[in-house]
Image (cartoon, rainbow, N blue to C red):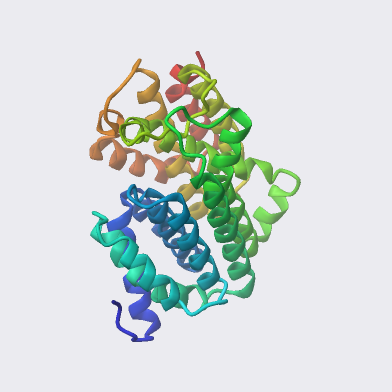
Length: 320
């Protein structure tokens, strides 16, 4: 279990370190944000990761997952002491293989302490996001089948509760910290949902062999892979429109979004080039590709034309 030291800089150091352990991609993108935004977005990512860990635990029944998700949400909303979530959760996950994710759950008090140092408007946005995600995932716990989700609307709803809502959260936080962005995004907030959904669709397609192996599919049952890739392409178009609304004065915010976007575009292109693949490593981007793109984003975010050119070049296979 975690120690009860309440030192803000120790807490933040833990947040940075565990982020690197539980997500290579977000450990790369989140530090690009301005410090005040980096803190709250990093914090939200860890809270969402706790929800995800419960979701991913293959040997837990849907009912246990629902109970743990509900306890977690009550702890985030300060309705119950955090220990009343941490102890039963660690007990339920005692056979879970990922030690870093278990460590994160043990440190839920640390993560929540950091949340409570953020502005009240940011805290409200995070609570809304975690509530929708946690309740939404609980709703979908009972819908796991090997055939997949019923249809496209159900798939879109699933992508919304696990990721579209994160797009909304980013929009609120970016708007809280940048008046120029708040002006630009007015009446175009739905683009943020597409941004989150595009990233989630990438994960669903990439992870589908592993999901299939454990008897689950998050794809819509009545839609082909080609149609899904085309829907992802449309969401990516909206994602780029979203990124272009971020003012050039906010290069950190632009780069954070463009890096996540570009990695999704390149991953989906790799998936589209294969009729099938049996492991996500087959469509995983190499470290050198990721680092080359990371360097490219430094320059690209200063030019709308360059970002559009990248998308046009790398999404050709998705437009078919």
